[in-house]
Image (cartoon, rainbow, N blue to C red; front, side, top):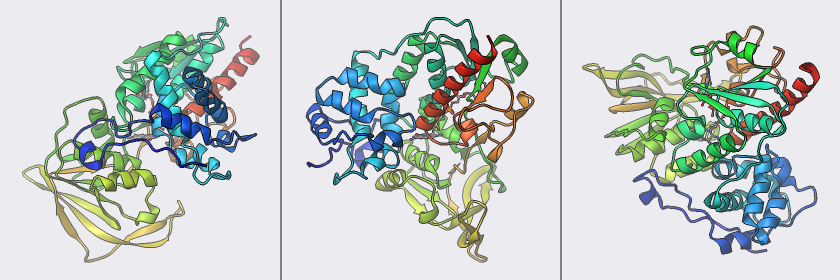
Length: 451
Ligand SMILES: Cc1cc2nc3c(=O)[nH]c(=O)nc-3n(C[C@H](O)[C@H](O)[C@H](O)COP(=O)(O)OP(=O)(O)OC[C@H]3O[C@@H](n4cnc5c(N)ncnc54)[C@H](O)[C@@H]3O)c2cc1C
């Protein structure tokens, strides 16, 4: 059956010296050989494993016959962020996981193949289907992350006039302002964001924040429907003394600066507090910004850590250290600057409401880790006050915007929501899927209600 193709990647020693992309893609001969391993299953389980519903066997078949651009276009029919998702999707948990249920010894490297054709197309210029015949209906999309742009693209294809309102100066959401460049180069994110905006003739108003520069009432007055996709704001606070000291950084803000090319310099040892993917990105980025040593503190054990396995292994390979069963209780200062983090050891007790065992502090285990910089990466929360902006919106779990899962519809007529703001924080491909689902429901709503 042949062995699974593997992308070349920079060694940990080389890669942690900068922000160059770590994975280097497949060569043509590797991609063709890998495509030849596909069984082209009828009712392919990999398709069901992709939230965006990419026709995986279809694109692999085109790749196999060297129709690379055709393959990429087929993917973009389902997911305009083909090159982004090929790089950042947890494919081993999605399409490739379903593939492993076939007779193959190892699943097809679907993400690597997707990346190959998306990159081939990008070299020639991405071409997406243009806008449909005008319907005369207007839709406002709040936020230009993957959820908002996927929704805007689908709506424009259906002929609706779409205006995207984006608080930042650059569109793209976390593709541009969050995910580190060594995993997702800015050129890839910008090429795909740009393609969506150009092809669909979607109007984007950047630097316009709903609730500050434009009111919900104005948005409603001037549009027939609204899609809310403002993502998550930062940051859940740790709630321990000293969190506002200089030297204590919030992971979201730190990663944002790094992703947008600010010259962020760190020195000495850095602790990162948290056990999720954002903590892993903060730790690896801290190394690249000059930290001599990075230690991740996590209050539970490795088994409970929410970070994806590959993210953990990536960080560990770069020399990031982990102190499990440890929690900070105070940031220590001298002369108004951080000098250390006082921590205490924990042991796991009974499960809490999340089903994970609750960490309990062990008396007498206090110790101070001396550091000039600590990065808090303990979670993101929805933007405060968002739900109140549109009277009638309901707050779901963790203050997310409550929606109907089939239609992304909120209880407020004509207002839909999706992406992180509604699902509480998931993946790019999930945001795309929800944006598309909302577009379909918005189209049906506009045809039914706004005749
Ligand atoms: C550091 C980091 C790394 C990640 N790595 C991965 C990964 O490897 N793989 C993966 O699949 N997912 C990853 N994710 C998650 C992924 O980025 C998100 O799930 C996805 O971007 C959500 O898309 P969205 O469109 O809902 O929101 P966002 O991408 O957050 O976009 C929301 C947009 O709305 C704008 N906005 C907010 N409020 C307003 C307002 N009031 N008015 C106007 N505009 C507003 C924001 O400025 C932003 O541009 C990562 C997230 C982070 C933080």
